[in-house]
Image 1 (cartoon, rainbow, N blue to C red):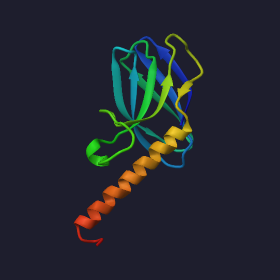
Image 2 (cartoon, rainbow, N blue to C red):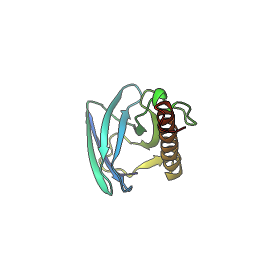
Image 3 (cartoon, rainbow, N blue to C red):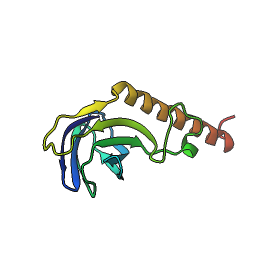
Image 4 (tube, rainbow, N blue to C red):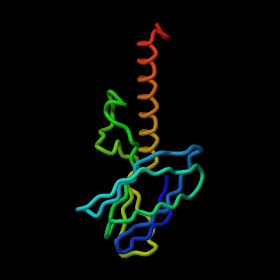
Length: 137
């Protein structure tokens, strides 16, 4: 995932995020200005630039994408999570810039690690469910 372009205006920010993966991502977008935060679920279509407007936040400075999972869904997990799930990537925004270039914190290695953690956790959960139902012994 890559932040292609963003526009920070009075009470809104419009993000263009490229999803270079071959599948649709269902993530939580969290935009903050340091004192106020807006969180909303977003769908990032595969292999395209997705335009996401976020209304109701002034002078946005940070945009983060989270995998929307809970401790209950993951069970034991190697990556710390919060109320939004666990972070995939953080983008730093500059208020007042109309077409600034993204400053991505965290690289693709973190994303790959996070996705692997999700898949491993989902596999463990599925095996537990299958054992409890008596399908696997």
